[in-house]
Amino acid sequence: MKLGISVARNTVKKILMKNGIHPNPGKRAGDWDLFLKRHMDTLWACDFFTKDVWTGFGKVTYYVLFFIHVGTRRVHISGITLPAEWTVD
Image (tube, rainbow, N blue to C red; front, side):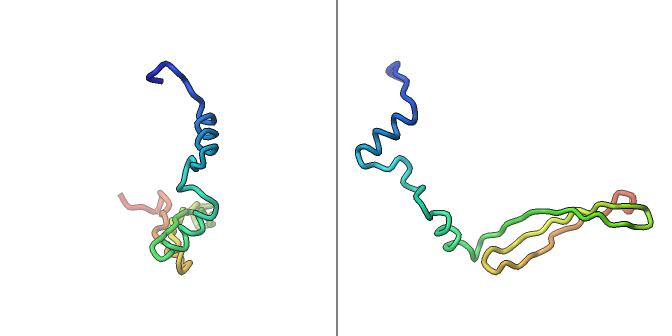
């Protein structure tokens, strides 16, 4: 835009590809699979789930945070919430 000319991204992409230059050389097919294979020993994923449990106080919802080691697929439970009425002030 410094010269007062506006060019769309798709135009730049077409020009690069026409001249044999990949517009994003780090993003080729299969890169994600290769990345996972190279790093699976050090990669962790995390998520949480909820579980409703009937107790003497009624239905209580627990939240469970867990981590999965991608290389071994082992699950590590990091924490579970206590219901508010069970906490001590």
